[in-house]
Image (tube, rainbow, N blue to C red; front, top):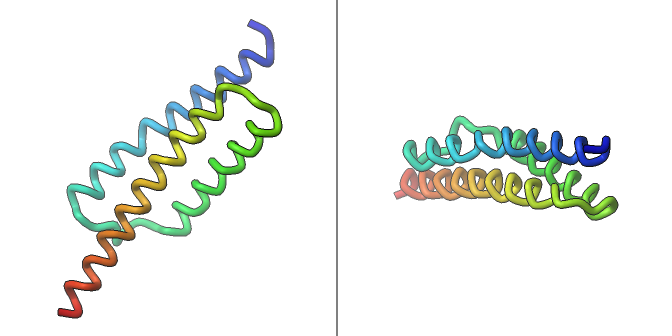
Length: 95
């Protein structure tokens, strides 16, 4: 395995490790039906990092881009659920 292939493999492995944590976070959000304790700034920074990774893969294409997209989709799902439940809780508080 040459150095470039090893670098792509290690980058993909890192993204897999990060990606494996998001389903647990999504499950917790669904179970609690709340995202109140989660930071939207944190979500934004993570998404920005993944989007920068996607841009890097557009500039220098490789198969690793699919891992960036999958991870970004998981983060976006968790963030979307948090926003949904927060909006729903605000609506219930106004009734």
